[in-house]
Amino acid sequence: MRERRASQGVRRAREFEAFMAGAAGRLLHTATLLTAEPRGANPRARRLLTLALAHTYASWDRLHGEDPYDSARRELVARFQHAAWHQYGRFGRQRPSPDHVLARLRPQERLILVLRLYEGVAEEQAAALLGLPTDRVRAICARAMATLLHPPLGPAPTRVEAAPS
Image (cartoon, rainbow, N blue to C red; front, side):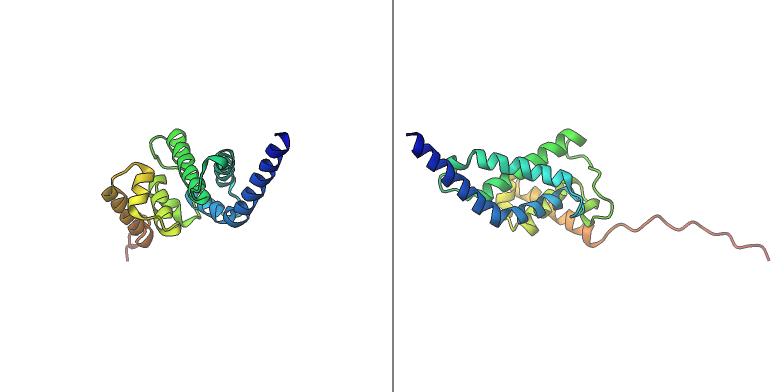
């Protein structure tokens, strides 16, 4: 009995290591996009990913044929939503790196844009994952794209008075 549990534990660890080898890089990039941190300095993204992967490992035996990547991504999204909600109010504006192109977006806009464009999640799946109507996901994604493609102009130039001649 004890030997069987030990061999199951070894098998489980090997399967999870194989999953990590293939998915960890992409999931870290997803987390970094969500937090809008620079690639080299992304402590919030690394923490989100660590917690999501720990949950995935803990529930590994209960996946029963479910895609572990989807499970890890779902957990990553839930943890990002939770952090955004509790740290800055209901999807309030986080303070990401001002140099990041996604920094102009609110957390919910970043989340939907990353899911739809980087992760390739369909509108219906994103809506179900986030608990939003499909039309709302479509509108938020369109607004986020418009913000990125047509950034607001800087402040208007100050008026310079001509010197009297």
